Length: 386
Image 1: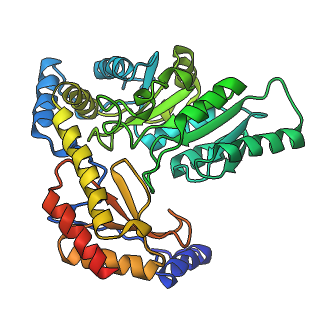
Image 2: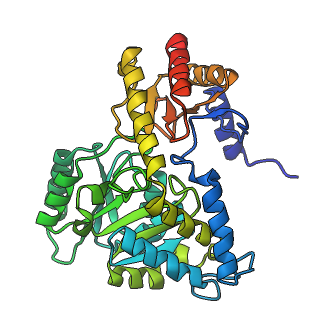
């Protein structure tokens, strides 16, 4: 085998030098405070059984999709799932992609056109950044969750570039941010974007299943679903399966089918994967509210214990399942993570470039299946190690 090119080896060496080298690992048997399986649906036996039964009912025995959705892979379960998504999320149309990454890359590389401008929150997910990077539109970031900063950035950009009647302005944010678990003031953002005629896109990956009356997401909790241009919902977090969907108008749906390359040129999800998402959404609607209530109770208990142990200065303020404890320096945050692992708790250290330097952190993900005893003990240990 040939050696790595010098530039690539140097990048690896740099990661080793600052103790930020990533490696794949296993955490079997540890108490889970790291996965995105907020409701335990990925391990839910009822959903597993219903998935298998639905495949039998529809007489589906294929292991794979056999092709892209535009060729041979658009099996009948896609239609069932997309109809369920439009009803549950109160959308005109839904288009399922293979993952949240594929959905974001597919949207932002295809929708904003040359001459258009994209304004994105500085903490936006890497998949959106990558999609924006593939677009021909210009793009500018604005300060995190700061509507005033967005307004100022748009005003400055328009002064420098002049006005063009054909320029579309796209604004993108998340309803729950993946590293801090914090949420923007979506009422203000949607109000301003609607008033100015901007196209607002909201990624709801970490809100679906958690927020809303039935877990529909933050936008529906605020009754704002009709005021955004597009929503991205994913199935790999609280839904416990795999895939994602873009929710929007029927015209947007048709456009993406014709121009979104990550949809057009990817082999479709296998029937079993789509059937799992159908079963999970059905369970969420019919039986899953007990899990949601346990999750919400655990989030509240976690925050109570943070306050009791006087750890507030380390934690971001979040009403979601993500609770981040900022511990500056790669060495220190990795050391604390390893100590917690030795005690049986899986809490991941998040390092640059995923977060900015100086914002290294432990990312606690709270679940419906975590016990009060586990939450109390892991935070007691954290307090001791800090």
